[in-house]
Length: 442
Image (tube, rainbow, N blue to C red):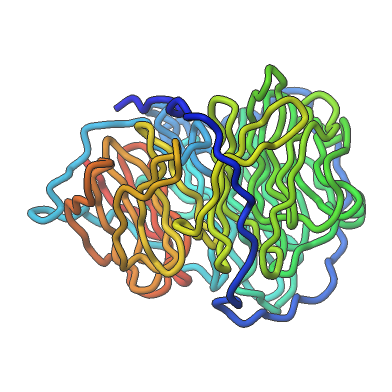
């Protein structure tokens, strides 16, 4: 299914951005101990790592069906394959494997080279794991220092794969480039000590973003955003709006003919020039506890954002150096999971647990369905596969703006399941706080 672009927006209606109202849904947790020192930077090899012969079998298949980074192959939460089983009431997806995790948290997986990559934790170390996509068996692991004190789990970011390399970011700001086939460390940086970064209260969560030869990260503090050479790890430029880092992964976009990165920081939304990091536009967006975590949706000159803590959502038109409010309401309050834009409509899960369909032309809710708590969702072959964040149900819903149409559900793991599911190579990967599991979607 090909999804249309952003619909034509009618005449602008003056609307002030709705700021925080009610109190938080959770009690804040004290931040962990100070960051540990990163491993020294190691020079990178000049060419992409070579793939060992024993892994050649793993890489067979269509790479376009991989999920190489947060939000998938096109950074929009949408899988590219079709032909899945949609008769879940007659035949639920078959479990292929499960793998126990020790991080008690929410880091998401990525898929490339026939492997599943995820950041786990044991004792006082994070462990980057590579698992065989077909069997769930361990291929390699790489450990680095963290702490033994969790803060709603440990690592939050999704590993990012690009051209034989894997980029990971820890909650404390340790950035690693690893050889994807073996786990060998190529280089590392520290967002706090090297960039003057300021960790948010619930630690770094934004996944590294690859843009061509650049790797984009958001340290916060003195450096709102930084571009590194993805091969060597050397700094290319720094810029953006300083202050507290947000939790959302930046978005590559072209607005007003300018290539830029849209950043949802701790207290602001802004665009940073892709060549220099210079701030092109910005607007305040304040949330209780500075939790801006859901990825912005960008299309046709407009940016949509949503936050929890009774803040809600809003649409901005980016005109020259200004973010002009179009509308704002509280109908989608996404605490951290990102919405999906498809077929001219927005679909998202937000407090108090509603899956909603919104018309972005004016912000009107087309339909809403309760029962999803803080779960996430993924688009696959004309459907939305959504998690019930509290009970762990996996629900297939038609990606249809006319009404809520549930096609089936099953409960594969149960328990708190806040991490958004992903889909790659005809498979569905989900996790709760204890287990990562893979299911056949075909």
